[in-house]
Each structure stands twice: as C-alpha cells, then as structure tokens.
Length: 401
Image 1: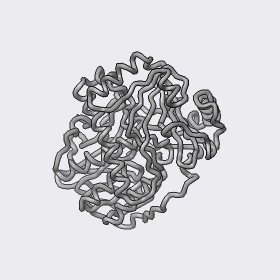
Image 2: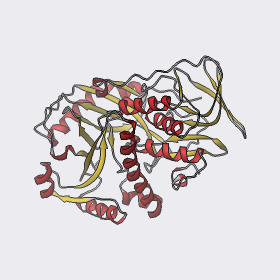
Image 3: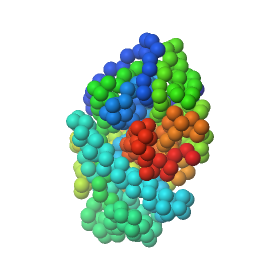
Image 4: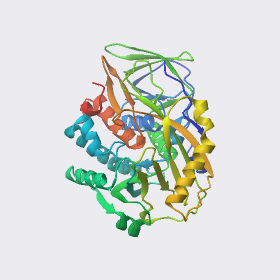
C-alpha cells in the first residue's frame, strides 16, 4: 500500500497557463502489458513515453489523474547542479561516484532539451545560465574551490567575484558561480506532451486507478487495483514520488516542505534571465517566465504534516517576497500566486533509480531532491535501458544495491 499525502496546496502559477488535456479512462476490466507505470506525474510521463517509443506495450495508472499530483508544485528550474555541491558530494560518496553523478546530470539536461524539441510541443523551453550565490553554506573562497573542481570534472563553471557579479548581473553579493546550459520550461505542458506522445505510441492511461497490492513471480507482476480490475505486466515501474509503496526499501529518506510564490507578469528582467539560487540554508531560488513573472521559492523545512505546512503559505510567501525585493529592488515582489509542496530527498541529494532488491521485475524511482525534472529524465533513460536489456553505465550509481 502507498503512503497517501497531499502533495501540494495553494495556487501554483502554472494554472495561469493552459496545458493540453490528457484523457484517461477508468480501468473497467483486467488488462495485460509489457510495462505498467504507476504514477502520471513528470517522472511517470517521461518513463511511459520512453517505453512506448521503444515499442513496448505500456499502461500508466494514477490514483488522482494526469498532472494532478506534485507536477504543478515545481518551480521548474531545470538544472544539472545537484543539491549537494560537487566537493561536498565527493566527501560523502567518493570522487568517482560524485563526478559520475554530476556528469550524468549534465547529460540529462542536454538530453531533456533534445527530447522536448522532439515532442513538438511548446512547453516554453528556454536555455538559461544559473547563478549560484555565495551564502552561509559556501563563502567566496569555497565557491572558487567548487568552480575549480567542476572544471576539472569537465563541467563548465565560471567564478564571479563581487565586482564581476555586480557589473554583469546587478546583484550585490560577494561572489557566484556562473553555469551555462540549464533550462526553464512549463512542467504541466511537458508532462502532458509526454503522456500524449506515449498514447500516440499505443500506451493506455487509466485514472483514477490505485494500485493496492502487488505480487511478483519469475515471469510477471500482478497488480490489484482498488476498484477490482487486475493488471498483469512483465515489469512494473513505481513513479509515485514520496508516496512510497511498502515494498520500496527504506533507504535514508526524508520529506521536505517547500514554499513558492510568483509575481504579476512584466517584471523587469536581468541579464540572460539567469536562474538564481543561494549556497545557504534555507536558500532562495528564482527564475523568470516568458511573460515576465518571477517565480521564487525556498524556506524549506522538514515535513511535519499537511495542516502545519499549509498554514504557513501566507507567512512563507511574504518572507520569500521580502528576500526577493532585497535581492532585486526593481521588482514588485507582491505575490500573485502562492503555494506549498513536499518532496523526498536523500542525505546525498542523489536519487534512487532501479530494480528493487529481490524483485527484478519491479522498479522504483525516488529521492529526487530539489531538481526533480532533471532526475526524472535520467530515470526514464535508466529504466528504459534496463527493461530493454541494454544495461546502463550509471545503473549501479543510482541503484538500490
């Protein structure tokens, strides 16, 4: 059985923009497929699309429906920069694994950009640099060392001192790392496009449909749904975010609450509309939309319960607005949208993607931290490679072993 929680509350900015409708029918009778994907958020959508494009018969189910979970809670800063700075991750998991994780993340962003273009839908994709500002977690000297380590790993990173940051971007902080090649997009449009293309390649979408019992054998997986019909699949992929099924290993995993707001449109921009985030705890992160809204979030806290989290929306959005105004005084920081959501993370910030121990036909994707869209793309690559029998160079890096 999955853990059931409210994934988001409030009014996310993405509802200001129209997304394509994704039809999903009720599961009326027993079904059979090569792969069953449980979850139709960003991860489930990208995985279903990759598997259907590979020619496998795919069924996707969701207990809510397409795009109705945490998809709308994201601020969609699509970065290859993991939650843990490279040097800190080296200390946690070793140099080889840390560098491999950062390199795969960089490749994931590039692959996602190509995939979005192949989908042939306008999900407001734009390539943007990012500015990682010095803060209470990394001072200017530590940022300079981090930039050097990234360059040594083959990942572009430019250190900006106070003067270069002020002259180039008008931001009065001590230092920053400038990283090219990150992305912004509309997450609801991306998810809808992936699901619709999966359907065009033969995938069947069913919602509301909740998996309540999973049994596995050497030859197939049987999934019972709450309303009665059973699905038999060659493989099952659990893409349910932090609403984990009982059979998923309890690796070190925690739930974090985050809050976000968005301004009115037509706010003044800054050079390159760079993504901005801080080396601080808690940290501020922000981006600008095509119509000039500024989406800004942060003030993360350990999750306690939905009621306590939701009660803080007004207080947290006001605090975020004040921080935004201090950083960019020319901006009107008044929130036009404010919302909260929760996400799972691991101590290293690295995801868990792969086969479940002793259940080779069952896969799970979890622990995505603050850069879930990038890691959802990586999950779609790894899961598809493993199910098709090709293997993946980073399967062990992110696996449950």
